[in-house]
Length: 265
Image (cartoon, rainbow, N blue to C red; front, side, top):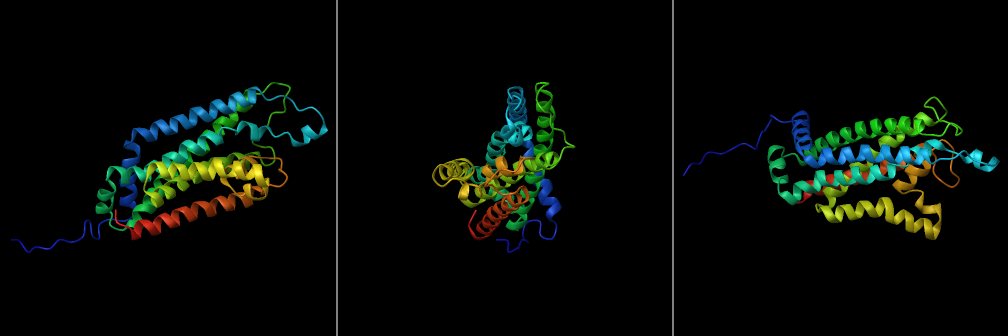
């Protein structure tokens, strides 16, 4: 019997660059990635155009003051966050359900490096897609407005900020989904947690306690803090809301990172 010993896989020969390249190959080879991103683009643009085509000129001083067509055109973010969030879950939990996580960790034994590479690659892709689709949706939706309705412009105060933050929001929800997937390691439960945090809990809390607590949840932040040019009473400011979202994202990824490092694959 041979008594030869073997060094750990790729010892000294792998790093973040190699891990990221591996994750990029896996991500782009999955059909679900392309289908999900395509659905995000088509769905958000369609919702933005339909919403703006049905937007009427405000009547009365109070309605004129609160009129925010930028918020209207970005209504499709509610759909985009669901698709990209679920895709983030699948990017992580899919490897556990299929067993390919063992191959991933055999190639990159440093589990924290593996998760960091996965988050960087997926987060970067989600950010690019999010920014592109929000800009295209804004331009297409604005073009669909009736002539008598005030048309927002990227040069107007807070409009560019709202569009940029909405695109970044999609990427952060995707990373939240990835972090939740790393925590639960189960697709259905991870999607349940994601939907609960983004849709169910804020709706329940808004109905029982108003905005006092609900304003701290992602969907409420997106619709009432990030994608607005006119401040909404009782809601977080855009930058405060963005900071809370960064904390959500960092927390889910940190917990997922710790559990991935401690548990068996």
